[in-house]
Image (tube, rainbow, N blue to C red; front, side, top):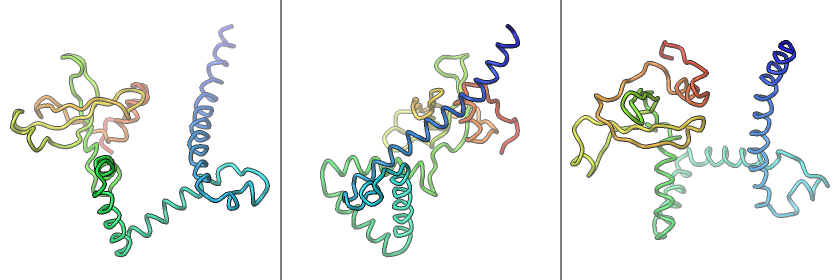
Amino acid sequence: MGIMKKYLITGLLVWIPLAITAWVLQLVVSTLDRSLLLLPASWRPLHLLGVEVWGVGALVTLLVVMATGVVASNFFGQRLVLLWENVLSRIPVVKSIYSSVKQVSDTLLGPGGQAFRKALLVEYPRKGSWTIAFQTGVPGGEILAHIPEDCVSVYVPTTPNPTSGFFLILPKADVLELGMSVDSALKYIISMGVVVPDSQKH
């Protein structure tokens, strides 16, 4: 019985990651495939080939995104983007949504983005209880008049989903800067502490 249990667990350890990976890929590609609905019916694979081709929408989406990046990288493309943003900034409700989303995306994805600068160790949610967090910047604006000097902005992610979490402003003396890379810290969080990062900084 012990040997059978061992084989069962070993088999699950092989198949569970594969199954979850396949499920996530299927979900992502199926979602991107919906972009084909934006094309005229006569341009869709079902009309041209007589069958649905899985993944074509995802490929088209990636090509459109890359083409947009190529155009937006040159001088004339940048002028078009500025013109488009100027138009959106004149629409009351759209202006608020677009500017907020753009600021966050520029911070997270832009080449000069400063999101998740360093991996930190902080006492949270109570003293004596430690968790990994990320420094996202330093406080600014009106907030500076109400907090002690030398504070940092900190994001404390949840596990195993680090896209949700808590934003905190802490005194710099209350955070410990870690030598591990941000990627290693994220793996540590997602694995719920199972995948221990190397002690050396990457």
